[in-house]
Structures are given as C-alpha cells and as structure tokens.
Length: 87
Image 1 (cartoon, one colour):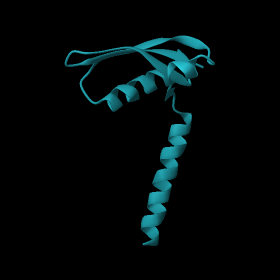
Image 2 (tube, rainbow, N blue to C red):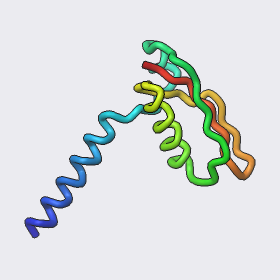
Image 3 (cartoon, rainbow, N blue to C red):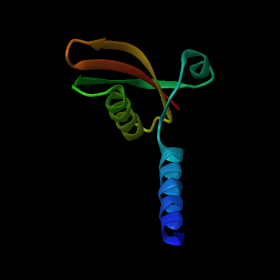
Image 4 (cartoon, one colour):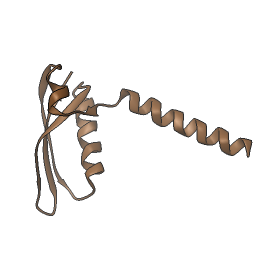
C-alpha cells in the first residue's frame, strides 16, 4: 500500500511541475495585462480539443510564450486554430 501511495504522489508532483512551465490558455480579460509576441496556427488536427490545446501549447513554448489565446477556430472534419501568443 505504501508503494502505491508513493508512486501516485510522484506521478502527481511530476504532472504539476510539468504544468508549471507550460504555456497556458488564457481569455481576453487575462490577455489585457500581457504583451503580445505573435501568433501561431495549428491545422489538420483530427482529434479532441485537448489535442488542439497541446499542439498550441507546444508551439507557444517553442516561441518563448508563457500564454496563448485562441482568436480563431474552425472545424471541417479537421481543426484549424489560430492563437495569439503572450509573454
């Protein structure tokens, strides 16, 4: 029982520490206090909205952004999403 608790705790802490460095999705109100640094787009993703957010998050991080806000989204069997990046 103690090993299961330890494994669960380590898993939770590693998830939380990973999330602490990831670019986060924000809304328009939150974006007002941040500096825009560009845009990114994700196209051709056939998956869940979480897949879209993960792709946007990865692109935002590669460009040094700490946050992103979706400004355009379309779904015609494959998603196309554009997001503005913020520092």
